[in-house]
Amino acid sequence: MVFTQQSAVSINLVASLLLLGLVNFSIVECRRLASTGSDVTYSAINCRKHTAFLTDFGGKGDGKTSNTLVFRSAIQNLSQFANDGGAQLVLPPGKWLTGSFNLTSHFTLYLQLGAVILASQDEGDYPLIEPLPSYGTGRDGPGGRHNSNPKNYSVYCCFDDFDVVRVICGTEFVICANGTIDGQGSLWWEKFHKKKLKNTRPYLIELMYSKKIQISNLTLIDSPSWFVHPDLTITAPVDSPNTDGIDPDSCKNVKIQDVFIVSGDDCVAVKSGWDEYGIKFNMPTEQIIIRRLTCISPDSAVIALGSEMSGGIKNLRAEDIRAINSESAVRIKTAPGRGAYVKNIFVDGMNLKTMKYVFWATGAYGQHPDPGYDPKALPRVDRINYRNVVAEDVEMAGNMGGIEGDPFTGFCLSNVTIGLAEKHKKLQWNCTDISGVSSGVTPPPCEVLKDKGKMECEYPSEKIPIDMVELKTCSFTSSSQML
Ligand SMILES: *[C@@H]1O[C@H](CO)[C@@H](O)[C@H](O)[C@H]1NC(C)=O
Ligand SMILES: *[C@@H]1O[C@H](CO)[C@@H](O)[C@H](O)[C@H]1NC(C)=O
Ligand SMILES: *[C@@H]1O[C@H](CO)[C@@H](O)[C@H](O)[C@H]1NC(C)=O
Ligand SMILES: *[C@@H]1O[C@H](CO)[C@@H](O)[C@H](O)[C@H]1NC(C)=O
Ligand SMILES: *[C@@H]1O[C@H](CO)[C@@H](O)[C@H](O)[C@H]1NC(C)=O
Ligand SMILES: *[C@@H]1O[C@H](CO)[C@@H](O)[C@H](O)[C@H]1NC(C)=O
Ligand SMILES: *[C@@H]1O[C@H](CO)[C@@H](O)[C@H](O)[C@H]1NC(C)=O
Image (tube, rainbow, N blue to C red):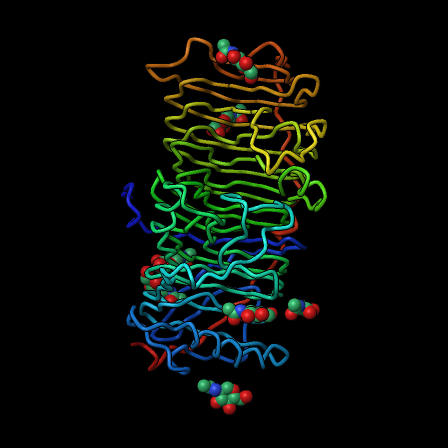
């Protein structure tokens, strides 16, 4: 594979993906099956009785004509089938320029191979909406957020080679694709770097208060900000600001699987609201599995837990994780003021190459939405398990600092082999305000991680609910719809 630092890199989700919900989510993997002739077959959580093509509604895939009204009227028209077997809207190959639009329930948006949704580059195409209730304020500035609306949005698309998709209050819809969404984020990154943003940048795909969502095999590039919020697969130049790959935020039952991410920030950032707003919103992220993730994240973590975790993060599994050139592996980020907890975290199997730290925990992350946070709201960090880890070219094995008077407890590290970089730090483990156990760790860890002799850290053997969702085989005939 060839990676570059430029946005032209387009990543194919090797298989598929997952997703989110501020409410009760059920995310599913959508694997593309073989297709013969013009019959397209794919697997999804649900199939649809009715099929339409964007061209039926006058869509033009020339990359220049705006399709905003076409998308809106097509989806409006197809919403009549919500209670009659549902509908799928197919985007044939082409470049479909558009502003934001709403998805609807019992609906599939299918991007054929070569179909690209280009997000409009006009800031005016992104109406301002309220900040997320669990954040209280915008992440980039005091104002609201572009291009979202706390109503029943489904998908927002915007920009000129990629787009922004947003779903709020949807039930049971699917975005299944061989295609791409391009957020054309450079315009926004430039404004961010010049500190010209008064409001939070749009996200590429945002799904809120939705259930039963599937996003599969979609390539997302150049999001203005966080890519999928709770969210998907991705690349961005490594110097783009806060372009986390996938951010499940206050989500339950999420599967992120077979994903390749090159990120200027964390590859996957698991979150649940910010300080007093997140504590009040009180919606944890839980029952998540991240499987076969490959990550390149030179300045950030492969998987970050936090720093916004004020609704709590629990019952997360990560298995078969690979990283090249990343700052740290599964990192805990929190601070006094966050409250809540990070607990029952299970990691099995990491293969890491060229890392600053393998283990990194930070109880002094800082960053607060406003002075109204409660410094006495201390997070509880407990039962954090890592086993079967191989790393090479590492500067420092473990930099683990809890909070004074609020130590992080229950760390377990077993079967960990870390090879050091030529220019490694003299101090390999710095453990402050943490406790736990270890077994078979090289180089030998700090004494507070008590050596237990032969033992394995825990990894649950029962299936996680999201792994039990069964997919159906769906199809349509693309026939004369090709451009
Ligand atoms: C995903 O789409 C790409 C084309 O963009 C295709 O080559 C690949 O086979 C698809 N993956 C799966 C699992 O269907
Ligand atoms: C997806 O793209 C691949 C080529 O990369 C193609 O072989 C396959 O038929 C496409 N699948 C569907 C379902 O369109
Ligand atoms: C939209 O739906 C109506 C039926 O409600 C149908 O008659 C009409 O042809 C549809 N419009 C398009 C452009 O397909
Ligand atoms: C959003 O959709 C739900 C059902 O999915 C409905 O109950 C609710 O009234 C809708 N809200 C708005 C603002 O349209
Ligand atoms: C999306 O739907 C909401 C109502 O649920 C509506 O207020 C809003 O204008 C729609 N947005 C777009 C871009 O169509
Ligand atoms: C230790 O971890 C490595 C890397 O994941 C794995 O190949 C090996 O089988 C593990 N050893 C044991 C005893 O589990
Ligand atoms: C170890 O970590 C603590 C806090 O996490 C920090 O204050 C201290 O400077 C570190 N020590 C070294 C030698 O890096």
